[in-house]
Length: 163
Image 1: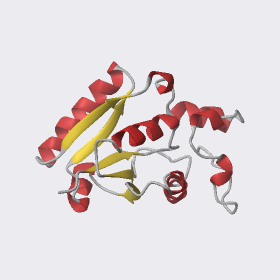
Image 2: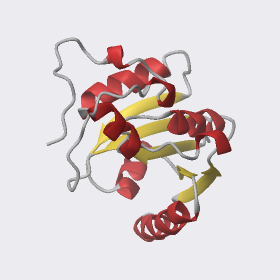
Image 3: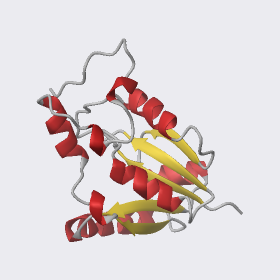
Image 4: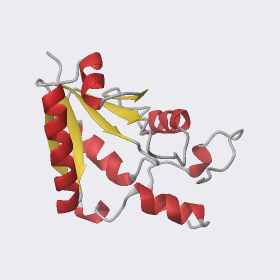
């Protein structure tokens, strides 16, 4: 039986820290589905479908990794795709407190779902999507924080804006 994990998040944008977790997760699981959820309480900076395309490009040479957008509860999505594992990265104790609560709720909804935490590599622990968006929004160079070129955005798309 294949060990399928989902790595859920908004990935707005997908960072080098996310990339590191996926790469290390590939050593533990047969397949990883990078699952881009739609959080109804957040306005996205990068549109979901564009981020799906970008992340697919990042992992185009790795058949273990799939990318899919989803709506609804993560625990329900895991059932739909046959995943028994949730992969999550932890940068610090604040992340642990938040992720532990989410893991407990997911386990309550889907008793077969096990959350696996990977500690973020120290050199990447300071990176988060919010900081990257803020730097980019004000014209700063974020290239060293992301595993893709910002020119990867489709040319017919307007520059991302925060409302």
